Image (cartoon, rainbow, N blue to C red):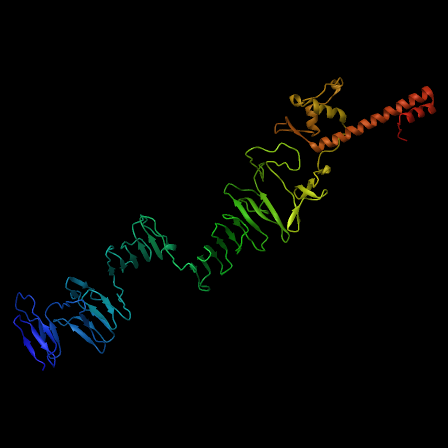
Length: 512
């Protein structure tokens, strides 16, 4: 039968109905007389702290109606009908055996549903909680084994810190150490990560998935993104809501492609620029030093660009821009061992121009009469190199003929004015009759001159070609005049019939 027994140690045992089990009230160390528990007709009053001794000990609050745990002065801890645990007096708290585990100011609330407060110092909330619903200027801190502020809510400055309690900006800040930077840029203050050594953010996935950072707006949740695909070890960048039409791709071999090109025809480390159907410049070079006036072709700070030559047939245009008299486009080649010295079809040079014609999937050289290389002046062809090496120059674009000169003497003057470079020149007794000098050669534009008007070693090849033609013709005219003079002399001496016979014998024909 159920009964109450008091043993020799002062313990009070309450037995169940069949005397098989009991619950015992044991007196601890008592240093003075005290009414520890007072039983009223509808209340139980505890004189001091309520201690729950074992790890499994639980203090439960009912959820039906208003359940109240009240201090002797009538204030304290209240669980009301809306399941809010309210602290009406900041001096009252729930205390574990080793000290305070929960101490919240009088205006703070914890919203509880089916709540357990355990003696191990743990607060368990099964259906959510609201801390500081009244928006008081108070802080909330959770301490871990290594961090005094493993989680810190700064109520006054509206900050959340992990590992840190200082307010240097950033709504959510993760700090593994002080970086030394004490200010945060407004555009990057949502999440801040810092350390006093190397640090970073990890996005971890299985090796057949991808991780992404997405950028969205009110009209598109993934307007732009950065994505790493672990299946191919490639990284993709997309903008303007393109989705799978990637703007930039970094491939596993170090290749880089733009414009959605997913199979670049470059080696590892190469760059593939795909402008799709656009006809504007694909690559520009700029400098703050550039300030050319040709803004119809490129912006004033552009000093060079690459673009398609033809809108539909493609081809490459390479353009350069400069100010003043400097070169707009400078091509320079470097060769370690110097150029080839032979003159044959298999000999190369430091700078090579190689014109080829598409032949199926391969190439052939230009036809003999095909224009291999063309030099233009403002869009007009001035010089042509044919497929068989013949050179053609626009004669109308150069200096005129040399009819006002004795062309043969100009040719000889050129040889005589080479100075020490006139190797192998045979002296002639007629050289003293040559009336032209270097100035005449410069005036006739047969040799070059520097910015001071002094002669240089440059030779006008097309001009020399015309000079030689003129010299040949002038010599031909002199020959014909001499022939007519000799013929007239022969007629006077031997008669016309014998004079004609002499011409026939030597196969000389007169111009009739």
